Image 1 (cartoon, rainbow, N blue to C red):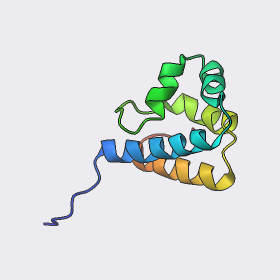
Image 2: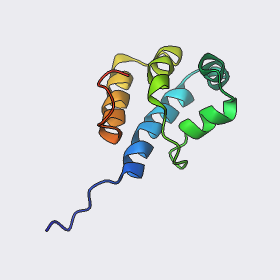
Image 3: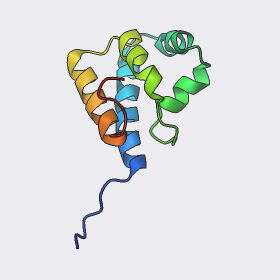
Image 4: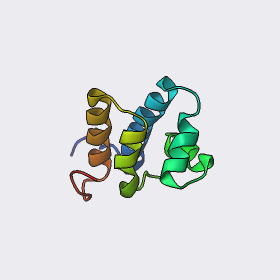
Length: 95
């Protein structure tokens, strides 16, 4: 039996949320508000989905919009999607 713990779902969710947070931090001010408007949500929703401390996962239907609105680079997109799919392996390959 291995003594090394497998990452739990919260750690995996926190990983992709940290990537989103870092992307948002590099973007001009107002990006969180634009993202909230694009998703039809409040800015507080963006705060929750971009904060690794919150347990709220990012809904699959928002992933594509987040990537487009935030203008992820190819590398950022690949890292984010890889982490997202590790956290949610049961979801489709391309949300």
